[in-house]
Image (cartoon, rainbow, N blue to C red; front, side, top):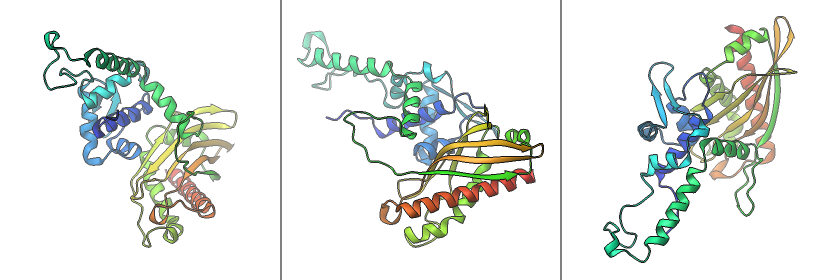
Length: 306
C-alpha cells in the first residue's frame, strides 16, 4: 500500500496553497486563478473550493470582485485540516484487518501498531501549516529549495530583463497596477500571439497550439531605492503539460515628473516543444525575450491610454 493523497485530496491541498498565496491581497482569489495556477480542472474547481468552505478553511464572496479567501492566516491553518477537508477523517472507525469496528473483545493484532502510525501521521500534518507550505513553494519556484536524496527533473528557465518608458508619473502607474492583475491578461495573450511565429517551428505544426488562459498575480508594491517594486507572476495553460510561467518583479522608476521607466526582471519558463521535448537554448531565449518585449510595449500603451 502506498501512502498518497487521492486526486480530490491533491486538488484540495493545491487550492488551499493558492488561497494562502493570495491571503492579504486586496481582492479574493478567483476560481480561474486557482484552476490555472494549481492545475485544478475547471469543471472541478468549484467543488474543491466548496470542500474548503464547508471545512471552515475558506469563505466565498459574490459579485464582480468575488472569489475565495482563507478564513484565517496561513500560519493558523494546519495541513491536517486541509487534507481532511478533501479526504475525510484520517482515523478509520473500522478494523485494519476487516470491515467491522475495532472492539476490545475482538481486537486485532494490528490495532496498536496501526493506531500509533496513524497518530504519528496526524501529528506531523498538524505540525505543518499552510504558511510553511507556501514558504517551501516559493523557495522551490525560485530554485532555492533542495532536499537531500530527493530526485526531481530540472525544468529549464530563462533569465529575462527588459525595460520600456511610459509617459505617465510613477504614482499614476502604481495606482493602475494596484490590486488584481486580471486586466493584464489580454495584453499577455497578445504578447504570446506575437511570439507564436517562433512556436510554430517547435510546436505541433499549426497555430494556436497554446491555449489563451492566463492567470496573473500582482503582489503588494514595495518601496525600493530604485522606485517601486511589484512582485509579478503569470502562468498559462496548454496541452503539453509544462505551461509557460514567469516569476519576477515589475519595477517602476521615475525618469522625471511626467515619465517613468518600467522594468520586468525574473525567470521565464517557456512551454515544451514538439512531442513534449524541451526547447533548445536559442529558441527558449528568443521566445522568452520576445514575449517580455511585446508585453512591455503593450503595457506601456495601455497605461498611456488610461
